[in-house]
Image (cartoon, rainbow, N blue to C red):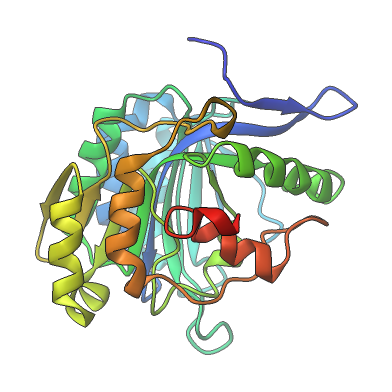
Length: 298
């Protein structure tokens, strides 16, 4: 595997920020057992050999080794009880400290966490095959409803409280330089994505709610995109042939990303809280999210 081109370590030598490839779908409703099983089966059919542990997304849950008996228990007893107790999602991992594989689904409670988008998340090593990522995105939108989503490069910050402020400060500088590597904090974005999409990435996904709001916008975006793929549930727009970092220090302008972003601007969120750390604020966060349509504002 080639060396990760964006990898930042803390003073104690631990990983602080790294470049990843990812795929996220934001959902209008928390997945129930049937939807979760669909996501789980799709992921396991592709990545079962890499999974080493899993845990509930309930705070304080400990990882459980992924053994044949654990898998049998999860499929037959645990997953069918999703949302009936404290567990509203699960995360699976290969256990690596860097360049890791993670997939998870999580639902927010409609009453106590109203207004938040649930999600399905896949994280991969930065060099993960882009064709595989595209194929996974097509399969997901073929079998489930979503609000919106993205696929491509993103910057993963370390979330442990000791490291988080510094990590997101480093993300700020990296995101301003590499426009194709998306600044990302799921915990923040889920509060804003019920009626708009976040920003354009290599793959940009719009579900039926957004697709029906402005059909003429969707048609313009299809013409602007390198390619597009549609299902009954969503449309997938591919900005360029392959994902790129878009290093501004090297004048790497992401023309395809900009073309799709300009077409989709009427459907983009109009507010988004800061990602974290001391450098992000509401103003520069929104200016960053519109970097492809208003480049002179960033």
